[in-house]
Amino acid sequence: MKKCITVILAALLLCGLLTLYAFSAMLGDTDGNGKITSADARIALRISAKLEKPDDEMKKRADVDRNGRVNSSDARIILRAAAKLSDLTAADEYVTFSAEDERVTLPDTQELLTLAVDDEILAPPDTGESVSLPPEQVRLPDDRTSYYAAGSRGLLTPFTDNGLGKARFCEVLSDKGETSDAADKTDKSSVLCTPLTKGTFDTVVGEQTYNGKKMYVLSCGLKAYAKDVRIVQDGYVLPPNRLTAGETVVGKNTTDLYLDTLWAVPANIGVLPQEYHTGYQDRKFNVSAFTAQYLDVTFYHTSAVTGNFSLPSNGLFKSFTWLSKGNGSVTLRCLLSEVGNFSGCSVSLTDDGRFCISVKNMPAQTKTVVIDPGHGGKDTGAKGFSSATPEAALNLAIATQTVQELRSRGIRVITVRTSDEEHSLDERRQFSRYFKPDAYVSIHNDYTDSASATGTHAFYYYPWSMPLAECVHRHMVEAYREKIYTPGTAAYARADRGIHFYPFFVTRVEECPAILVECGFVSNRSEYNVLCTAEHQRTLAKAIADGIIEFLESK
Image (cartoon, rainbow, N blue to C red; front, side):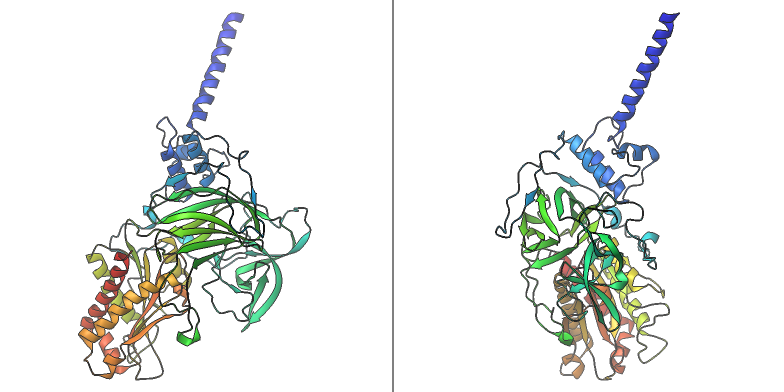
């Protein structure tokens, strides 16, 4: 009897061990094929980015760190397991910069990983129907809730004592908190100061007010609008930051570089070398040509970096180099494969507290364009000479023809609106961020108190958007002078109003080339009649499409 009980207990124990082994073997085997490969890591990364909708079983297998959610750290663990890599933490040594040594050679101890993903969902199939943003992407009124309300995300914050005393901090709450140089005594937009990432912190060293708008001066040398941040009056001082380079993730739309960080420091993006000149309305960021040779991503309050990134297989970059600025900040310099071979970049924080540098691929495997007919709904835009056909209606008519022309030539098109409906500026701008297009074009018509003003002009914000503006504008001018206006007339002579830098809200996106086109003047009776004519609308729409396609084919 005792022998029988012993056998039964042994069998139960063996069964339990086998069950435990079977369950543990499931971890990391995301696709359930019995082995762990890079494909499992790719699936985990797609789940973390909400590009894959897993069932409960798949989610359990992908959540290898067992923290209740699938994020990029799970993908990284799976990838290392697939590559049979040991724990690299002990082998990594932080590199501390000194002011005397600008260029730093990093240790070769960390193996470099490249992961490819399919992010096709961010550029959905072009069915010819209007595409809406997911509800969570439509910006809601700010409730001033901390980015860290649901947890620390594994990062140090001013909310817990770090043993270094206290200071006045601000936390960025806006998805893209706009900034400007603290030394500039205005709040004019600056292409040299890219938006701050939601969830980042910095100490507040002063306050300034411009036209009733309050701004906080930050210790990194930037200033931020009070509406985009919240103040932490007695925050705990944070130590110098440390960064660790992670994997390079190559998708169809973007190439993403992941970094581990101690805390969410401010970051800034720059493209160099690039010359600017003062132009339209005395704005100083007009460019004659986009001449960038490298992309610089600067992280403030950072004293140490470990590792480097593997070069992406798509040839986007020639090399990565870490530079010390000697002022408590470090810069990742990404040497472009060709001069001007750049279409946008952003810095964000992942759900598991990592920095992600997301760079637009050139060219993308599938060309995607967002067309935004300006105004709509209650916002009719300029009324022109007839309230029956306000600017919003003209914008939609020309945009609809532009969409049809692009689709007939194999371009995937996403439209912000296809009817007389209203969209906020935030929502319009989010189209160019969420869908990661190769070009974003907002179509408008102009108005001025001078009844004699005619012609077309195009506007850009970041210098990498200027080539798109130049292509579209040149085709628009040709359309007016070759198919609409007669040589020798005033309208013919004034058709070309140029391309200009101007900080329109919808063009202030760093993720992709984004421009605003003013097709003509509804305040001029003759040009208003041109814009209301279906034949001329088709002519101008084809010109916009020709310019977009020329730009895309040049990449």
